[in-house]
Amino acid sequence: QRLSFVLFDMARERVREAAKALRTQDDAEKGGYDQHSFGKPKTLQLAAQKDVEVLNGSGLATLLRAFARNKANFTTLLQWAPKQVASLEGNFSSHDLACVMSSMTRLGVKNQPLYRQLLKYSSDRVAQMPPATLALLIRAMAKAKTFRRHVMREGVKIISARVHDLDIVSINSLLVACAEMGYRDERFLRLLAAVVRRRAEEMSAKELATAFHCFSQLRVHHAKWVDFMLFELFRRQHELEEIDSTRVLYAMMMLA
Image (cartoon, rainbow, N blue to C red; front, side, top):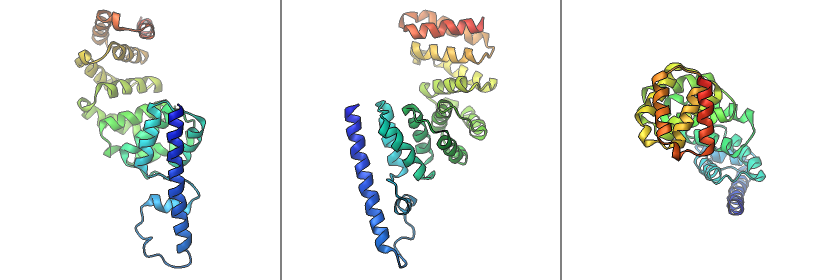
């Protein structure tokens, strides 16, 4: 945590220096037409016009992702990050947009208006996003406890057509997201369940327990899949932790 705070403070100071230099340059150019200002990247224009510290979209996404992985959710970062995201006004690539939203939810940032704005930007880009990015965005949407119908509907269509491109982590993330949002599209859920069954040997016992618990929570009747999953879980029960065993038992009670 201490190292993360030091690195964050260094990054923040660098951003401040860059923003200050851009504002100074802008002040010097006032009073006349600046032929060099035409075609400036949007990020630089924002830094010159507003009294905020600005990173570009890719840099901010990388920074937030690193802090989220280290669980560096100290107060200064939680106050600083939303301002940076808002100042860019959607100037992210499609993947960076999903990464930023995912990282902020993992850090525990509570800012529903900002999440709704990020989903609004995402709504126009859903068709450009690969399945893995969509899975990341849908998981972040569930964790943020918000919902945008167009993003979910179009995302499900794209993922359904290319579900085999997803890795196990993304499949599990989608099941968890659907369970948290109460999204009961039976066709889509059966498709995810089929992928889990086909790739069960690649999954850890914990991942199997999570998939079984989430699917059961949505109350979709699929007897053959349930039988298969119970067989696999009992076969590998020595690999389960206490929390995983509890989830499996709870899931069985919901199915009873």
